[in-house]
Length: 111
Image (cartoon, rainbow, N blue to C red; front, side):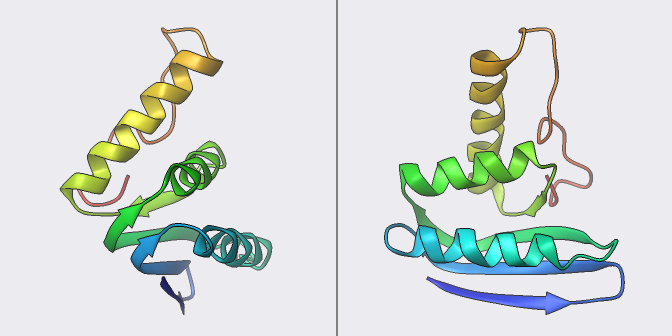
């Protein structure tokens, strides 16, 4: 996995390339926690457009980030995966009528 952080005045973008699998899931989790701790009013966007593979542990980390209302930028495949994770989360943790983060996309790129 390759991960980089791009800083801006209104947002921080954590870019993830290649594979989100062990042992890199722990590294990614640490990087995201650090990025969230240093937001200072900015939003955090996780860029998954160059992600080629993800393990169940990686999915779990993305689900945790979704619950913290982190936004994602991704392609069609990852967008569908995030929708499935959001649906799975709602059916396991909330009444079926609730809607949660990641359900709708604005402009089709950021979830």
